[in-house]
Length: 360
Image (cartoon, rainbow, N blue to C red; front, side):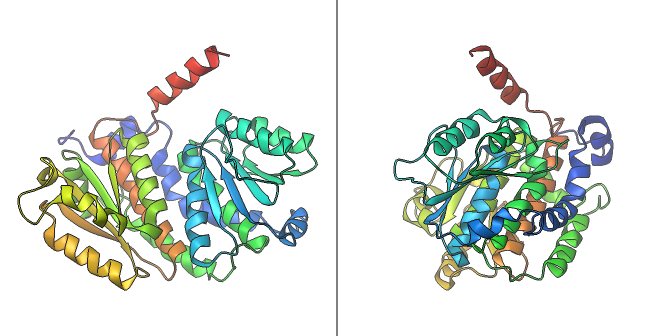
């Protein structure tokens, strides 16, 4: 940890692709994405919306797949059909053309998404591609049943989540899979306040900085309820990619049937590292009453003294998830800086891509 240098100085030195700047405009990215996807701009949405689908298969990898997780959670709560996220070269054996396919890749050149998309197109699927271009966008020109929604380029995929997810969500609302029942303007105004509050460059005296100091030196555990799984998974991935840090995830109530033993807190049985863990409990207002009781027990019996509760504020699951997204993005960038890492640097991923390209 680089304790003698301010985060502002570290950002100036290390943030080569302006991840801080992209995080500051996250809410504006969402606003632009919402306004981009309309029936007037994409009249083919009407026919898709009038079709009875069994569900949606969401293809994608990494940051481009995260939106599928969010859509799946939202559809579990109030959607017309299920959403299954597929992060692979292949498709499930049960899939057929009565499942709508959404293929998302920021670059449009993600090889897993391309191969899986080509498989479903050959099988007669209706596919909607969301990308900035690349090979995937070209498939829409070659197949009558493949449609293209362009996204915004010029930044790392994980920082483009606002662009991508807003387009996905606007699409789902436009074709009737999810209701359009949010006051978007009011929600986005509240979310912008969260962006400003957690901006550690502008607010260097924030209590948030204390959390970063503990995260920098301890193993990290992220715990939360089932419906916040998309935020937990994105938090882990942002810590992996931006901060070069491992993080473990626990989902309750499921973890109470297995992982709770390793956490201990009752008797002598526990993992040897439990007291070293920084534990972040993610919560929101819509948690099941029994899950709330489980959380209360876990907080009371967690052996680690380094525990924080991070509450996803808002009037809906959507807003709570986005609220948590903002906090996790700022957290992962700040943690990268205190480790002396450029938050945009992904050397091992680029090395692997080059290796795979050389094998063709």
